[in-house]
View 1 (cartoon, rainbow over the protein chains, first blue to last red):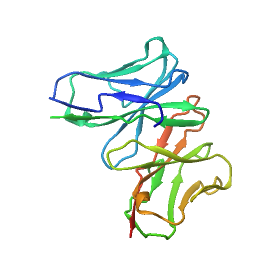
View 2 (cartoon, rainbow over the protein chains, first blue to last red; view 1 turned 90 degrees about the horizontal axis):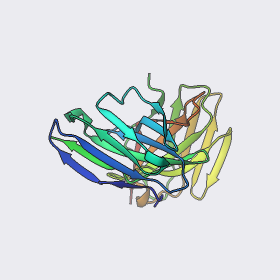
View 3 (tube, one colour; view 1 turned 60 degrees about the vertical axis):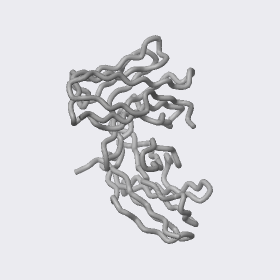
View 4 (cartoon, chains in turn yellow, red; view 1 turned 135 degrees about the vertical axis):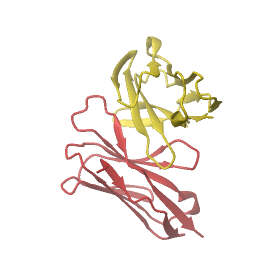
Amino acid sequence: DTGVSQNPRHKITKRGQNVTFRCDPISEHNRLYWYRQTLGQGPEFLTYFQNEAQLEKSRLLSDRFSAERPKGSFSTLEIQRTEQGDSAMYLCATRVRETQYFGPGTRLLVL
Amino acid sequence: QKEVEQNSGPLSVPEGAIASLNCTYSDRGSQSFFWYRQYSGKSPELIMSIYSNGDKEDGRFTAQLNKASQYVSLLIRDSQPSDSATYLCAVTVAGDSWGKLQFGAGTQVVVTP
């Protein structure tokens, strides 16, 4: 257990609906990452927060995606107007020195 | 060309044998290298990190790094059925201030009793 929690663990939604995922890192970890992993692939970087500042966003993060980290604590990732191609595992990670530790992930299925 | 390449496998290894996993990367300036283990349906779990050329051992695991050849490997000695998983190689992006990781697609390892 890395101490990083994510909710929900599973989400099934219909195409066109909005979904929101939450990540709760260990309180003193100020660097937080979101990744997306599709079947048979490694995780792909989506976005990075240092405290409450979103410092980098991948080109994968289309206009339908938004992430926040209010007060530098928990983080949310919202997907608007979901598409079937959004089906994936969404992973949150926090960084200690050089190493990233992953939460359990949220598995999204868009029907 | 993918930036981090791994053989997809599956790599079938008899119980008690050595599993050898390879990873090549294209970004010559990458500084930090990681091996993660991922069981089916679970999130990646860190096994090893390595930052300088040579070998690094931790229990049954040995990571080897050769920056000149842009190559990092993982050896698993005395393989156990519980080692059956997908092993992900990850590297940092040269010049990236934020430490994001680039992952390979993973090598599936199957340890047979």
